Image (cartoon, rainbow, N blue to C red; front, side, top):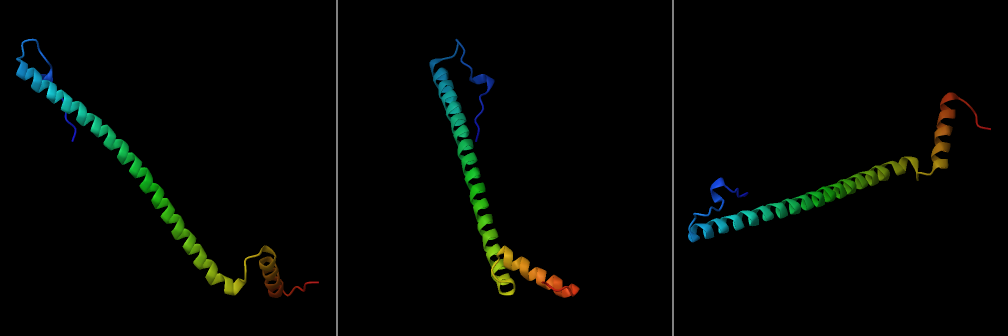
Length: 103
């Protein structure tokens, strides 16, 4: 989509007014296309950044959903995840395996 100027597009003193007008139009088109290309790149960069951010949000939602499913499956076995309850149950199980009594 990029329009390039050729060396024949430079204005010369001996050129006729029609050739000068055509070359001016070509130069105007080339400059306009160059500006459009720059603007297009800015827009593409913006949308790429937005898309990346949306993808990250979707990954977070999937992770959060998976974590909630894991918690919902483990809660019936271990109860609510509170530090004292969990440690206490683990300690009781360990003591029971080793035959140690809690006093």
